[in-house]
Length: 356
Image (cartoon, rainbow, N blue to C red; front, side):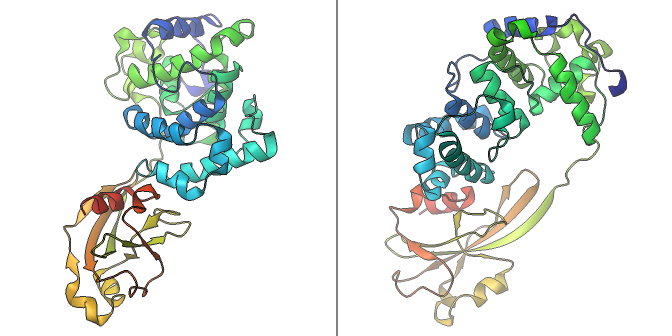
């Protein structure tokens, strides 16, 4: 089926009813952020789950909520505290936007999350799909979500072969996803379970590879299943190319465990996080170290840190100095051994420091 001829292959509302019934029995119903209509918890989980697996998010979510249980608490926290709780979860712009969003909810909305996707999407870090997830799960608003998993479900069910690299095709898919929603008369009662059900289908059944079509509640109306080639959907012609970068790290530490850390500039790799001084090559690193300490520089094994679209080849060099006071040749500050675990650190820096 072409994008131009897209249609819902069943009676209005029927597909939604199948998804709702399936979710109640077979969907995910015991995740820590479920069984609640608290928009703070739903919003936090939605942001954490962007490009991150559920298994990883569980522990971060629990730790974050234990320390910052409300949007007011998050708004009042320092950015360092937020980045510290986020450290290791990656995509740190999410954490910075999370902090800004909480402050805007308190400042502009009296600490109460807006109830509609139209207003939610005006807040920092909340896109159209996230706004719809919050408003449908918490307030029963009849709006469609289209995260990566749900896009896969919708394009396969409808046989939507429009190129989603094109904005016009993306808009058409949003309209099609809206057509699939529960009927207005039942939306208030069914939207939360329908939204969750679509996410669950994409995460557990309608997989990118080897989808489990026999266990899908909408198999009988799915165009892709009938065609026998569900993996061709969704269609996106423009793909981001992977790149690589080599970075040299200067790891300066005293015998009592204090380390020299600098705040990374924005924008840039690890923006806003506390990090060892970074260099483009070994020569630049050595040039930053005073002559009396050159002999003390020790290389550590090179390792690769994988980002979504870039491989970072990291070259750590360790420098042991006698005391914290003399080292002030680079921008940064000394951080005591008891302090750095609570800071926002890039995952590979935290890994190195944990080695001792």
